[in-house]
Length: 360
Image (spheres, rainbow, N blue to C red):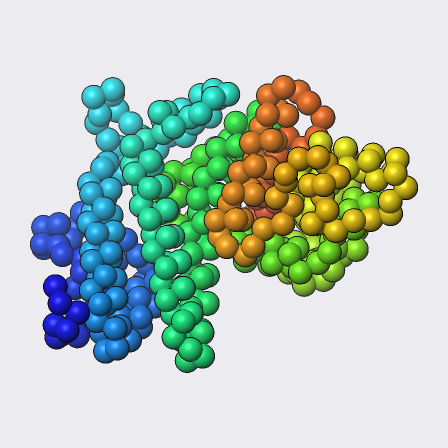
């Protein structure tokens, strides 16, 4: 199609391409939420008027994602009773299956098809929203707010992806109360059904702020304690994060997971670097010197890109799982695991207090 072709004003809802029969089978928003659709409409308004080539590209991408969303929606709901070839599946049987199967290896083949397909759609959405953010970012000051809004939606999508990992890890933790494990399993089913999680919406802004603050600070790679950095970060956070720091930083696993998050290297590398600096009598070094002293390339620093955040998380996640499996010293969970575990316990305590509170 020629970039000079005229376009009619088209609302995002027009791209859903559904019949009346199909409309009852999936969310009328298509692949995107109401909030995301509102942002997309603003971008389409601009490109329709000023950049018809990108307008066409964006429209095609949106239609493709909505088509994938419709295909995913045709799979049986994970929250309702379904008669499958392997027998009857209910929400309860799925939750018990998640708790029962604790294989040490990759669990992909044990996951419901709808979860796997939805995850792929979420990743495609995150990439698309990120592209929209970059495009809007080049349109000048009038569109800075729109670009930042797309960035926020991209990060929330990434945190939904991260939340899946956290839930799977916490569900497999037999040291946790069964009540919590079932709650995390239900949260995981809700996440797979909609790929939009309340916990990740609550936790995401906090961890994103910590991540952003972490990059602006200069950790003292000498004491490797990060105390001053942690205090500076905490001053910028909300009450929930401050409560987490006060109540949990005394736990070795939590404090070590925090060090990994702050310094961007593993507990083992932190231990080695601390010993090297102590032996050589060096008080502190910068992030750019870490690789030289360790004698190996490490990415102690990372940008604000959502892919950097997730990549660094997966390294910490894999290291933690390996330690747990091999019974090695060091954190057996990531900072994200510990934080969401803390938030769940706090919320449960609040619910119990509200339930048993007696009126005056």
